Image (cartoon, rainbow, N blue to C red; front, side, top):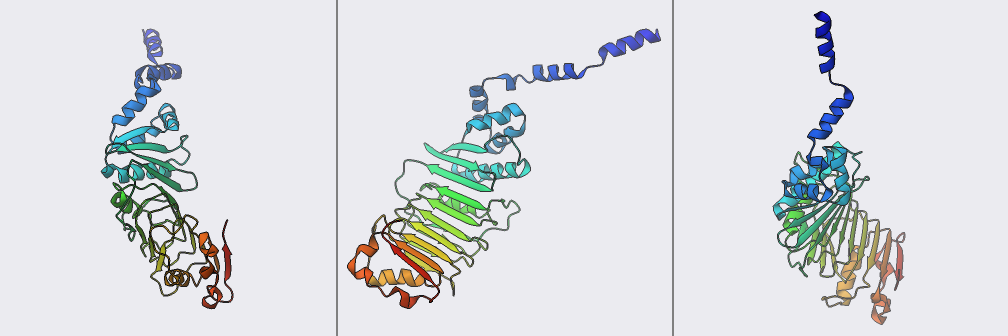
Length: 305
């Protein structure tokens, strides 16, 4: 009788192969097609949708196809926070960590995080001009600070400046900021970004003013229409400035006084490169630039780069 009981027990003991087979048979959802799984992800709340990438290898592979989620502008900070925190918890996760997010009507945000702590936020919509200024405020002391050192903003629309401003306040460790093709009228960098050292602005053709309260900004790269620079510090920390006005004067009337204010705002840099159409103008060529700079400054004037 004891032997019979032992035999029965042995028959009921599951093997590893049986467990795997049972798991596969029970996981009916993962066996669905990619299209159906991506559709399921799109129906989930944003914070839950992002977390599906580490349910299993099958789910993480879906994120190689850049899943598309839907929501509102209120969900944008949540989406980015979840994406960054997911990367921090699982840095070796085998996926691209890229999300396509549709909000409001036809607006699209593509959020991508790279291995070197770079975050790309690319906005796309049908609007042409953002009349409101973009003011990046002092970073908050939130417990949800995001470990992002480099941030790229592309095509911020008129529906998102407040959300972008709120989102950037989480990046207390931000060292480099690049803004591309964002059609706002003015840009202000708050003093709270204490370790921000590099600012790049490319092809923001509606931009007319740049205000900086940053104490440690060392590199400024600008390409676009003529703009006015304002630095609200006793002595700017800029070391390298490259100013490219090749896009033209824009909507600003260029005067000798206006140009001199810009150049004086940059007078403490070590290397200054100014290029574009300005120095094809006879009056501009005669500007006494060297009189306003330290003898150690390197000034480069060119019509092309």
